[in-house]
Structures are given as C-alpha cells and as structure tokens.
Amino acid sequence: MKPDHVSTSDIRSAFSAAMSAMYREEVPAYGTLMELVARVNDETLAANPKLKERLEATDYLDRISEERHGAIRLGTAAELAMMARVFAVMGMYPVGYYDLSTAGVPVHSTAFRPVGDAQLKRNPFRVFTSLLRLDLIADEELRKAAADILAQRRIFADGAVALTEKAERDGGLNMADASRFVDEVLETFRWHDEANVDAAMYHRLHDAHRLIADVVSFKGPHINHLTPRTLDIDRVQALMPDYDIAPKAVVEGPPTRSCPILLRQTSFKALEEPVSFRNADGVWEAGSHTARFGEIEQRGIALTPKGRALYDRLLDQSRKIVRPAVDGSNARDYEAALAQSFAEFPDDWAAIRAEGLGYFTYSLTAKGITAATSHGDIDALIGQGLVQFDPIVYEDFLPVSAAGIFQSNLGDGAQQEFVASPNQQRFEADLGMKVLNEFDHYAGIEQASIDACLRALSKQDAAD
Ligand code: OOG
Ligand code: NI
Image (cartoon, rainbow, N blue to C red):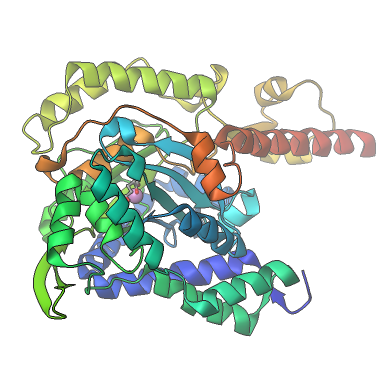
C-alpha cells in the first residue's frame, strides 16, 4: 500500500454509507426501519448490561449501528466477474455458494464481504449477489431474447472500470480517487424507472418468472434491499405495524433463543413502483414493477460444520411438520413446530462450546491478565478462570432463509419448481475465481485467539 493510499476498509465504509443514503432517499420505508432498529437496539442494550459489556469488550458494539447488507441480481458472467473486481477494491471477497434453484428461484449466489477479523470489525458491509440462470428457462426462444438484451447493456460507468483497473495496477487508491470510485460505482446500484425493453417483452419475461423480468428489463442491477442489524428481531417484527410497515408472515431461520445462533431475518413486502417501457414506436408506456423491499436481521454465533448439520436437520424436521405459507395463515403453527424441533439444540454458551457446535474467540480474564503461572490446554485454563470465551458472529447467509426472502417478494403466483441443479463450478468459472469457505475463516479466527491466550500466559510464566 502506497503512503497516500486509503485502506480498502475505508472505501467499503464510505460506499456502505453512500448506498444507505441513496436507498433511504429512494425507499423512505427503509429510513423508517432504520429508526425503529436504532430504537430497539438502544432499548435492548439498556436492558442487558451484560450483553452491552461483552459487545464492547469484543469490539462488536461499534459496528452494529453501522451494519447492513444489501442484495443485487446480475444477468451475465461478465457482469459477475467485473463485480468481483469492483468489490475487491473495497476489500470484499466472495464467500460461500448458495443454490436457490431448489427453492424455485432461477439464480445461484455468493456473498461479497470482508474476511479478516479487523476488517469485519471496522465495517462488515456485505452484498448478497445472485447470477440469473437462463439455463433454467424452458422457453428457448425467450432464453435467447433475454441473453441478447443482457449482452447489450453496460452496467458499469467508464469511470468505475478505469478506477478499478487503476486500483489493481497500483495496489490501491488515494483519497480523491477513492471518493470518485464510490460515486461512480454507486451509479451501478441506482434505480432506473425507464425499462430497457418494451411492455410486451417485459410481460413475456415476467410470465416466465418475475425475477427474470427484474434482471433483464432494466439498465442495471438496482439494489433491491438493504438490511440493518438488530439485537432483537422479535421486537422489531412486533413493532413494525406501529410504524406503518407490514412485515412478512414469519421470521426466517432459527427460533427465538437465549443464545442466538446463525441468522434470523424478516422483511417488508416489495413496493409496486411506477416504471415506463419503451415501445417500438418510441413512445413510453406507463407500467409498474415490484422489486424493492426492506429487511432486518439478527445475527448469532457462527456454527461449526457439526453445529450447522444439526441446524439443517432440525430446520428440515420442523418444515416437514409445517411449511410456512406465504399468506401467514399457519404462522403460529410454524413457530411452534420450529421451537419444538430446536429444543434439541443446546441453549447455553458453555454447552454449545463443550459440544463443539459453535466458534468462539478466547481472551484472558482479569484474573488471567495478572496470573503468574498457567498450565494446560484452553479447557483447563477456562476451568481455572484465566480464560473466557465469546461467540463469533455469523457473517454469512442461509439458503433456506434467502429463498424465503426471495419468495415473500415474488408473490404467491411465483411459486415454481425447478430441478435442483447446483453448479458451483460453473458459478466459479463465471466469477473468475473460487468462492471462499466460510468454515475455514471462522476456525482461523478462533485458533488465532487461542494461540494469543496461550502465548500471553506462557510469557507471564517466563517473566515470573
Ligand atoms: C436476495 C435474497 C437473499 C438474504 O438476506 O438472505 C437475501 C434477493 O432477493 O436478491 O438477501
Ligand atoms: Ni437480504
């Protein structure tokens, strides 16, 4: 990094703030949601001094009010590969592969996000990024028409491409370039109410799948939602109607617990917005399109492969008993089945740790900091009261939940079956790189904290 270069985390923070400001202006309900979340987070912290203390001690508190994720849907491999280069300038890398074909959504996805512990604490902004799978569209003629339309559009401003190339060449950007980069890249995510296609084509695409119309008919991949993080999602869900926001029927993910695991999410319905279509005679025709919504999330501990397998089994088990209907008619029954199924998942941190279900960071207690001697492995040190542990926050997404979020915004009519066809290899070829494995990353953070404790205690020994 050259002396006048700004850090990738600074660029990401600036971008995340600019995106939030733009979306608040475009979708005022998102601003309302932000206010509600800020209120609930303040109240939750005031009522839980212990939670506040641990969040402060682990550096998680500062990031929470700034924290959000967004989502976009891309149309072509070239768009995805370029997007990966743009995000890399902001220190965001593709983590995980999500196949949504099984859920009736013709996309596969990854999440671009920072990966280092320090970078996440500085600003964990993430973008759930989907690539449309035209190969799942049965109508060959329509598939070809959609591919032709997509091949003609250019979603990146020239300045965004030039600055990305400059950052790659020079290993970063200076302050002035970084600020221009943020402005230029923001344009790609902006809403355009003038469609790229005529009304007839829009309706053909829409009839094939609403999502295909959303990706193919517009100039670019408008940000379709932004999601602030709350410390109490049940409370936000309950308060939404007071703020004139109608939440989706059920919260996705695990049930309410005292020790939150993975990720819980809920959203409000996408807005029907006016758009215009350019017909062959050059005349604009008024219409509407439904794509943009708001979402909130509560994040819990990152689970190990063993913990995740248990989560997947329990979720599957409860959905076999009750599958949540989009209209909310069986929401109570679903919640009851979920709670009953998850009774099997330990709900205290010590048990989750002892059974190897979640990832933790380890640090010295006050007693550990002043201890003269210490022996044994990390479990023994915890037993002696020298070392404490805190949950590592889950930074990724959940395919079943993501499908639920997609579905709640596609309307009841959009339920459609595709043959399950995960194709990570194809996705990575289109992306131009492999996606990172989320588990390796959490395990690395955990191990580094264990090593730091053992090192500190052995030095104290030597000084004695
Ligand atoms: C993405 C839906 C998935 C999440 O939080 O799981 C998602 C989309 O609708 O494009 O954002
Ligand atoms: Ni989301």
